[in-house]
Image (cartoon, rainbow, N blue to C red):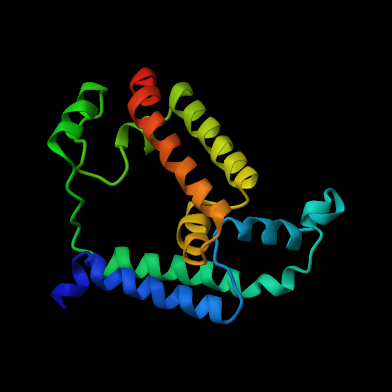
Length: 184
């Protein structure tokens, strides 16, 4: 039971992901979470307003089932199979985050100063809304999200996914090292 409660090492989770990707390739499917938003909008009738949403959404029901499984699996993992351990952050990173005003850096998965209702103010709300819009625009512009390009796209050796993943990493480095210190 103890190995279920601890994070799985890369040599267990990596091959499991490879098996899933091989099965998807075998069945001619490509995995991606962000494509489900398009499917949900099409189900909701967005095709009346934009041609982008006009497609046979019934062919994507399997991907919605994957999302449902991820939600249920995530709930089970966090509620029943978690030992409350947080990933170890580098002490230098913790010191830098504390210098920006993040107390208890590394004690939670997300900073309480940004993602809690008690700390919701104009600045934090604006950051979350602008960040969400940029992520949504980037996902649409890149033709997929990080999971779709990095996991599914790279496993099927797609050049656009390689370019997108390189862009994700460059953007993340710029955000973490140059923009985040300016914001906080």
